[in-house]
Image 1 (spheres, rainbow, N blue to C red):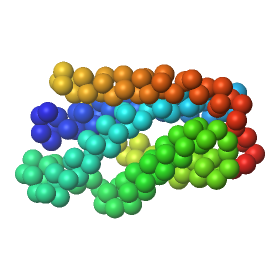
Image 2 (cartoon, rainbow, N blue to C red):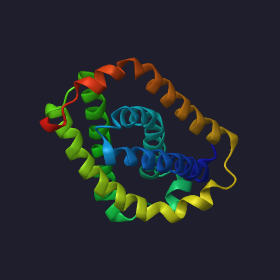
Image 3 (cartoon, rainbow, N blue to C red):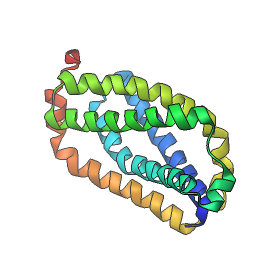
Length: 183
């Protein structure tokens, strides 16, 4: 897919899509009890693009530490981002999405919703630092993206849409079963 430069472009494309979806998801937080269905729908839609971004950044990390020349030439991310922010962001992302999906599947608050809320706070801080560190790098990388990368990003969105639509029959369960005072 174009080596280190192609990987950077794929990561940027995934980041751009995620930025739009995360803004939409964030807006649901202003009335999450009333906007629970869109919150869960968008959350499910986000999963494949998030996995794509984790995969592209994981590939960069593995390539760098395997001493692949073009990745070594690009250099590592800043040490604070690499050693502190990235591990926290990845773990918080996995916990936030898994507890959110599990809470939606179970249909009530309790421990799962509490863990979802706590992981969101941790994720929000780590994501904020990550976003600010990389935001200016993304726009130039979006120009001239190859068709393969566009197809991967589009496929991740289609998979997310399929997952969200497939889970929608649980909507009545989500609306009637959640208690937000339990977390």
